Image (tube, rainbow over all chains, first blue to last red; front, top):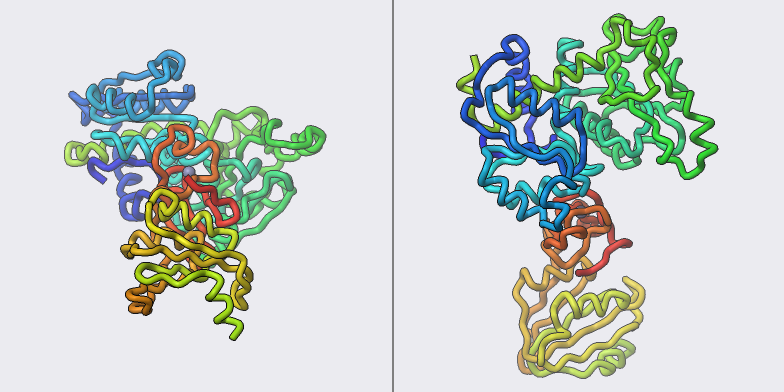
Length: 306
Length: 153
Ligand SMILES: [Zn+2]
């Protein structure tokens, strides 16, 4: 993976993926390691995403590297009409690695093609967000002890949710089974169901939440957004049907954990937060370790990790 | 007999290439992909001939022109069953069929309006994920462009 860009989770072989998770584990055990000493990481956020940017910048800082960049396009030369290629070629002169988030789909692949330094995709529109998937995998492995044979329940917007699509593709390598719980309008797209069928992996589809999480290992919650509905009445009908509440956790498996990519709005009631099964804030913390591992691997500095 | 009559409707050439079994609705796409609208060779074509196998078909005859394999495979996305006859001195000296390539550069636009190729006007690149139906996956946005939604650069 050294000097290679990370655009899509599919760019990584299963071995490489597991190696990154192992490295992230070492960083969790010993986070203060100045592996990136003397390195400069550029964080180019062409659209704002405070959480993701802070997570990356925290990771670079923990590793003793330096950060340059911008947090929205309006404060950069992009607002003056500069092409993505020109921005990347310029910033590549100032940095050893570029982390970018961009609203246009495919922008990260294009940047990786033109850039002389590696690119880490921190989200390109509705397309890919591989470091989110890495931290989800890390969280699953950490809480379940393994990535193999997990029953993953995905809840909410499964139609447009890039996070659940990438997670599905990644977990399909580890013999997962899936339960999709969503309103009719936001069901998992057919292409992903066909993909699972071809791989011989099991999935179920439901519209009801509480009764379908009892044998889950992971419940992965996502936001159901009003603007996704063609019929606003339909949104009003379903908006409260996909809210996870504390009492629904009764009778679920002891090892079950609730994940959410954050930010949450109301789809996980705050009464869940104190449950030992709530894992979404630790999940966000794991994001820092996962990103430390990804950047260290790409810059070929794994030998320096204690 | 019927076949002979049809052949008469597009005149014979002495030297060059005959491309047959083009779906009639894609004739002009073939012409454009091969750049035949920008060359000075003599070109004759006929369209809407009946074909038992494929409905209406079209034929193009290009005088004094021979194609490279890579060049001709570019039309596979619009005419996957096209057959070529290489003509020398009124005789067919070689027959070729097109092969759908594994990947395609340019030619087709990505149907995703939010794709970087459409926004910044860069050259498209696709992997062919289904050769029979000619289904393309954009190497940038990773979305599918199928033959029903194909728009040409
Ligand atoms: Zn595209």
